[in-house]
Length: 89
Image (cartoon, rainbow, N blue to C red; front, side, top):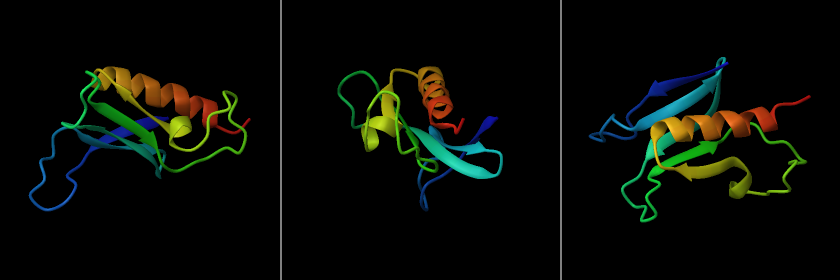
């Protein structure tokens, strides 16, 4: 089961729009809103903890474990869907 915790990255950094994602007690990744995107998809999600050698879609590197979304809800859905792909059989 995945759960989110709002966090602050660095002293003085705003706490809003920064989340760590946990699978049990293991840090699975993060979701954050960036002000640096120009494509209308400011939410960035990334899986940072578990990697599977063979990805069913043939993706490698960051393309396999991260992406952008238009909303926080879309980022959560994309993270959850990708996480399910990476789980061991």
